[in-house]
Image 1 (spheres, one colour):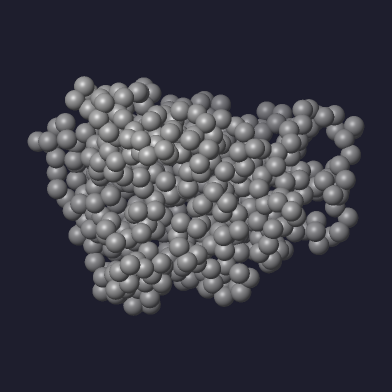
Image 2 (cartoon, rainbow, N blue to C red):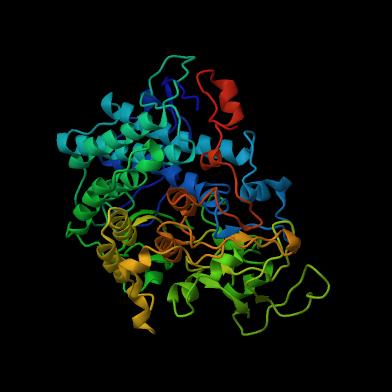
Length: 548
């Protein structure tokens, strides 16, 4: 949280350079450079401002990143104890059961990574405004400042969603010993909206290689729509119509965004040309070489699956889908078949992959992923349906080459549909949902159609405790009592594995009220994470979120 005063040395990380001939990430790392000895040219500025985006990827995808805690604290993904480990002091169990504390290392790590992104944006804005980074063209200068403000707003979107009441810091040149004041969640909301509204008119409208993986007008409007979609949670006042207005501007932009004919196209290895991606985090295993840059395949595949994909390193095999979630899928939904790994497993040469660790009764048998997991406290190597929404390319190493999708066009459509549903226009919402579903039911097109009446129904998710090691404690709650529960199901089927389920569950009032797998219902204050204890100790201006 502490932001160092600008002095005479400058660390510049050129980590997100998008060139005209390549849309993947290219990273050059520079050691400390004395500012007086470094004179950047105008041509180098686009590469230098890439440092603003570096922490978006790190915040979302690094081990114990936003992706993980948006998912494993919710009802789709679980990391149970495995024969090869995945206990780690009980932190994944505490996340699943909503019993985390103020001293969790992952919580402070998230806070630190995200605020480092804020700091990077503040530094770059300062260097531009001071003239250290030269841009002679006034239009380009204003557009660059606007891009940095929009990117900073994205970091604050993460902060408001996870912790709510956080400090707003926009200055880099600050006095020694400075400690920022804490802002209310409403103040943070107003700040983000203001930053976006002021930046959007100055951002480029184009959708091309020069704007890929960067904030253009439409990516910024998507972020603004997300703010309005969650406004009732963040401020207590709903902004459904404002969300619809932003979505309509994007839908009618005519710059080339649209739905892919097949959802899987958005998540293939070479996905940088997808017409559906509004904002991607550019990743290339040749350049983005941090150990945990994008390793979801390593976290979900057991060791033997190395030979199904010829992965260069042995995967670690922990996380899987919660069985109750898998049970919600229609068997004709291609999103189930495209996004998950299930059934008997074979090497690339067609040989059965065998179970190698766990209970003696399973060792030596074929790896056959089943939709069953004993409990958060114990599981077998073959238990749990595994993840492959992002294509696992043959010969991958520990980093996937796919760009991670932060915003996509289907999300814009579904945001509009949700707001229409919540404002009494269920049939109009159903038409949009049907549009999104159509590509998932090409073999059973009649199942793609959804009516407004159906969207007003509850969820088909069979909520309740299902810990197979303690069957007498199991409960059967169902989801029929969830308002707009069918729409919540639609969000799960379309956006699973995309690092957003916690946010959706909170908006639908389910995150702390329902039980699933080994997770009992929790207290309402758990919709926010605690301000990290070490941050409270370092800054007396911070107060803990209620309940902790």
